[in-house]
Image (cartoon, rainbow, N blue to C red):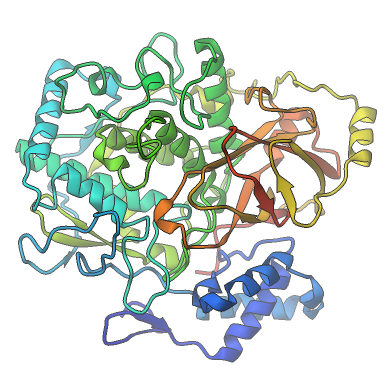
Length: 595
Ligand code: C2O
């Protein structure tokens, strides 16, 4: 077994060996400490092991996070950080497929196809390095090879776990209530938290290897849809033509948004459907969305990857900025708003991987993860917690055999034998020449006295604030400056109805921001984007939204103030009202140095 603080029961499930005292001590120390500085080791979600009838109670307590115990001092802090390792949650064990499946959406995988037991993934260093290229630059023979691959994939029989529809089922299974471990209250979920990026990387890996096998060509590489590239001399930021315009293509999908067809530019801040923004406006907005979500909003692993998730958790507690937007917003932009199930196929967890464009979209997601790691800032690394590194997932390989992958293998990219051809990344410096990022023109210019007056007259967020059609403005006091970690705005206790979409844009020092305010304003500092998750209708949890604010404050020339004024603008007429539990500014010190 992988850890000495974990035992396996007869069912192969992992159970942490914890004494109740340790859990209690840890929990109380953790709550006090997390008020201003996050615990380095990614707070462990003990929510998962609390019986459902007590869930609400715990969450309420957790969101208040009183400081009462902080007087215990440094000794307790050190002890607590040591205990945290002992009281760690448990990484996700590999699901047993198809047995653990309870999907009501018909997503269960076919009965064992080859009948071989699942084996551990090893990687194959003898494979040639595959170069993933931008899809709009593929040459004729690469396009023909891709077409042939998807033709073969679609022609596989329904019982073959490698078929396109079964790959979509596998994706569906890992979200939307598809996989229940024995004796677990909640199903496994791989969205809305830190497992999202690695799970999808490996899903894509096997998709690529399956196509390579069908094509009998180990050099086959998936292309990437380069939607982050706003250059007007390339066709990077439209739905790839080869996936959309040829009616006989195997790359097409019939359930798509009519406004997402070429030559319309991608809308990275989309909530689905159409926009009346011009191409020039979209280029600027798309660049600003990328800069905000990937550069300023996510300088730490916790911000980029999302909230921790351990075995048994009731869904994700919050996605990283990137999963949220543009990952989720591109899904919504491609999905058909008029389909019987709105936003099918791409905008629906259960069906999105039926659309071949899913894989080229995720190829770009995976590529941007590799770029994020190269941006300035010493914290742009993967999480180091064991619950992350030792999570295990079951996939089907190119021979239709089940294979179990340990997450630490997924972030070991040399083992996976692929690389990305480079494309322009002007968004890294906000579309400006490097070094000129800060030459911003505010949409709401304010003198120092106007800024002070605004701070003085803006109230704090009322307890249990509500965000409805009217934008919500509140003041948040910043903690004392610290050289350790990164300054972050947190909104906790967000209550969502899982069956409804929700979306907000957030602005700094801009109380008059409203629906038509452009995200190209430098005051824009992040979005919250929640896609309906119908399979999880019964799951209730409070979400948390976090975003880095320091760079935006510096860009705006507002870093010297002790308070910030935040405005949230809810998007879309049919979108649900949101309850917010509270807000604070704190320092994120992820990843941990303890494990
Ligand atoms: Cu599992 Cu892009 O989603």
